[in-house]
Image (cartoon, rainbow, N blue to C red):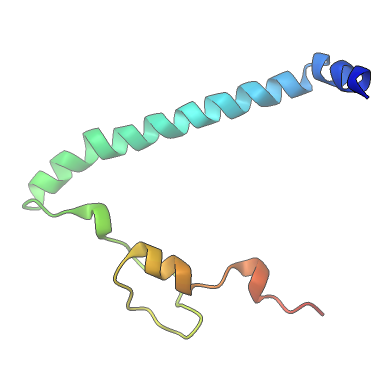
Length: 89
């Protein structure tokens, strides 16, 4: 089994996948830092010091039709996940 895995890993596909995952994670961190540290401070300054950390838009109502949530975490907790809302017919 180890020999088969070693042959698969040496083919290049696994190495390409690993490199892609590492680059993707690094790119995600760069974009997060860019938005948080470079883009949002001037926008907050222009809007009179508005704190955007708890601002969000509800795109889909909760399971009970509720759309008035106090935090993004509340909205996520109340919104059904697509895989759980389908009937198992």
